[in-house]
Amino acid sequence: MKAISFIWLLCTFLAKYISHSGLVTALPHPTSPASSASPVYLFARANEADANVGQWDIVGNSGVAAMHIAVVSYNEIIIIDKVEANPIKQANGNPAISTLYNVETNEYRILNLDSDTFCTAGSWFGNGTLLHAGGAENQFGYNEGYQSIRFFTPGDGADWSEIPEGMTSRRWYPAMATLPSGDVLVFGGAYKGTGKNNAGINNPTYEIWPLAGGIPEKAFDMPFLIETLPFNLYVFLHVIPNDEGKQIVFVFANKQGILFDFDTATIVKRLPEMPGSIRSYPLTGNSVLLPLHPPYYKPVVMICGGNTEMEIETLAEASCGRIDPTEDDPKWEMDDFGGVGRVMPDSVILPTGKVLYLNGAGAGFAGYHRGPNTNPLYVAIKPVLAPSVYDPETKQWSRLAPSIIPRLYHSVATLVSDGRIFVAGSNPQGDVYTKSEFPTEYRVEMFTPPYLLTGLARPKIISVGEYTELNTIRIPVSYGQNVEVTVTSGQDVPNFKAVLINPGFITHSNHFSQRFVSCNIVSAKYSARKRDSSTILTVEMPPNPTIFPPGPSYIYILDNDIPADYAIELLLN
Image 1 (cartoon, helix red, strand yellow):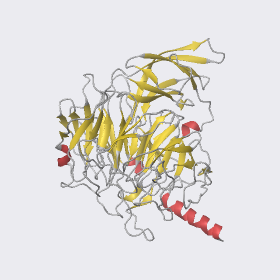
Image 2: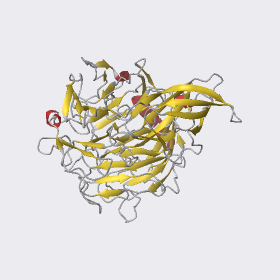
Image 3: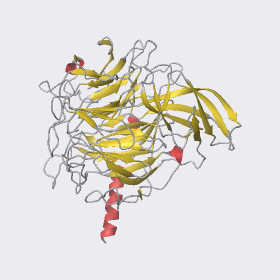
Image 4: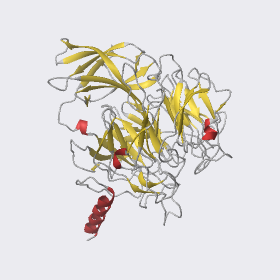
């Protein structure tokens, strides 16, 4: 009877929150996360494979709650949590707050940190080192992290290094971006934690961390961060392509946007106010720079979701706006977000150039539940379980298969090199709690998009330039360089595309420095040197670093819109 009741409750829940029909097999949430050595509750399938709507699989355990993530190699993702009582321990006995997750083995390695990483941000230096900035108060044996700077350089046995008070000032909820110079911008934030910002704790400055090394000597004033109070935390940032080598960035908070030149520290252009709701934390929306294509690399920013007020029952914003901020008279082009309102959505640019939207809630706002754990009042409700995919070319939306796991506050998602989507996190409470409606989540899911379920053969990258042992190092490439990529064809009549992707640093619905650039294929010729049928593609790298800022990237080769079995890791400089 208990099993029947459980199935009835599950079906009722799905009927309420999911518009897509289909078989869903439930998996009970563990009372505590399994160790990486014995993942007792893993490997459950959320729906049957379907080439039209994709497939969900629960594959692993993140070890720590996934508040922040970044792809650091073709098969590894760094995961960062705030300081809380995760059951696994780092070397000094403190509860672990960072792991390195392997997407092939679905196991993790514990990393070591000294300062609290609560509500921070990250981006890559041009040399391939990850910079992570900010934090919060000291607890559980950790030092205060408000001014901390942390570095991670991928490699065998790699771990974090820190400068405890490296920044010029305290930053909680800053934004970050890799600049065309290869330096890293650290932008805004608050002097301490808050539900929404206010003038007393606002940090209306930015600082630039140099690729060449050293510590910034000063911060620079940013009046825009005063104008956009109180909704100016985790600002949206996108580097804008240009032919002059200028470090111009799209900056957006609340409902306002500007183009800002970081070389001259001046506003280049003020953009019209975006229609609809607030788009910034805690009424959290999402911003993405849509795929850039030669020869013009026209920059179009798309901002979706959010909410009107900090009320639990208020339905999330069901609108998106597109804008080319470089036009003489830019205007927002609005749509209905595919008919689905979301607050706290994630956006992942797929190798096909389409954008996958997932995670988040249908009502409420970002933040922890109110009241005791035994009777919590969640401030975000109505989980949106089914992803939507957007085609920037046709401007059409479609709905995909739903997950069975609500992903609310502190959830993340990213593309990985085999073309799947890594999804983790959700912890809408101040500490670990696994026995509530929306528990601390350690379960890792992989979503397999429809392009991997066609049954057609995938191409395979055999070599890149002189390199035949692939994804052992980041292959160095230069701007404007023609790179030979040898591939096997997946189809009888091949139709190849080449794209560069930076998956970005993901936290709180921001995908800092996420970028997609199409590459020209200069030539394609049959290779007689291989025993199997293969083609040598001459792929032209982007012409300058404003189009694709320097640092780690992944080259995806697609045949008839089906990506190769693995993307190859590059270091573009």
